[in-house]
Amino acid sequence: MADAPRTVLISGCSSGIGLELAVQLAHDHRQRYQVVATMRDLGKKGALEAAAGEALGQTLTVAQLDVCSDESVAQCLSCIQGGEVDVLVNNAGVGLVGPLEGLSLAAMQNVFDTNFFGAVRLVRAVLPGMKKRRKGHIVVVSSVMGLQGVVFNEVYAASKFALEGFFESLAVQLLQFNIFITLVEPGPVVTDFEGKLLEQVSTAEFPDTDPDTLHYFRDFYLPASRELFRSVGQSPQDVAQVIVKVISSPRPPLRRQTNARYTPLAALKAVDPSGSLYVRTSHRLLFRWTRFLNLGLRCLACGCLRIRIWPR
Ligand SMILES: NC(=O)c1ccc[n+]([C@@H]2O[C@H](COP(=O)([O-])OP(=O)(O)OC[C@H]3O[C@@H](n4cnc5c(N)ncnc54)[C@H](OP(=O)(O)O)[C@@H]3O)[C@@H](O)[C@H]2O)c1
Image (cartoon, rainbow, N blue to C red; front, side, top):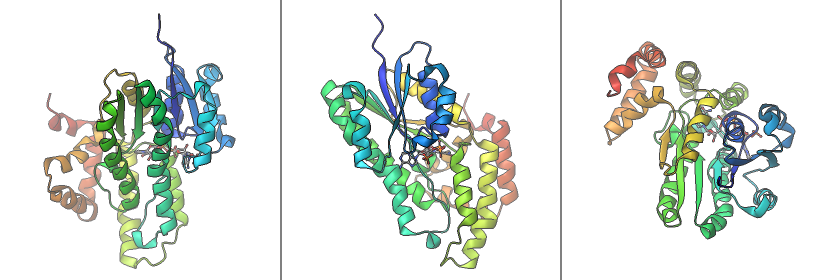
């Protein structure tokens, strides 16, 4: 007899990775999942419903969930049949880029409230049930920026580092309850995320920021960031496919990067634990060897560099 479908609760399904993941799981040909696809603003559910097609109301339901609100979390969970979540995907997230001096503390706190405390709120809500049933899987959409800091993304990277430390610590206790944790670490993904950030940046004035820093941000960082997304950016469909594999695995890994073309950049930190190689190389590539950076990114995009870096 086939196992009963597992209930998968996903946050942040109005667009991007969350939307794609919800749709892919709901269309699983073996119908292994009942997807509760959530978003904070149900006014945005049109794109998800259109993509879900016939799965809507069958293997996929849409629900309201603002990860920054305790009441919203409680309300959402109370609407789930049987109240049981087998797989929780903490996907909702916001970005923040720009010179630190020009960002408000409120904007920084919002990043932590959404990216870090949003995940913590959800985990605390589903954990008692998972522990009682002695099974469950918590997937966290982290980032390669949870492993290495990126210039002008200090607060966003810090929120993802916080997730990595929190969930790595929790993973040890939860194994005792047969509950698995997986931190998924995408590189750049071409979703609304970057669009929203660039919109923020184009209207932001960054008060209290000196002209040199603004020049480095606008004339060095922003063009390099656009080139990075253009050359090695992944589609949300590709990232969702990786997460589907992780969810269907009987022994899910603690960490899973999604973008092989980004791995050489992530490896800079791994090969030199002192951190100097990563910081100095990033600095040179951004501020001194800009042409080499663009060339390198194009090589990563076409795959020629990968042949030398990856062992066969
Ligand atoms: N795109 C990338 O390059 C990239 C790379 C690595 C990791 N990630 C991570 O991937 C995850 C998904 O991002 P994405 O690229 O798919 O971007 P996206 O299309 O902007 O999706 C982000 C989702 O989070 C939702 N959200 C924001 N604040 C929320 C809140 N308080 N409560 C509930 N939902 C909230 C957004 O809802 P609204 O529509 O209401 O804003 C949206 O549905 C994020 O955690 C992000 O940090 C992204």
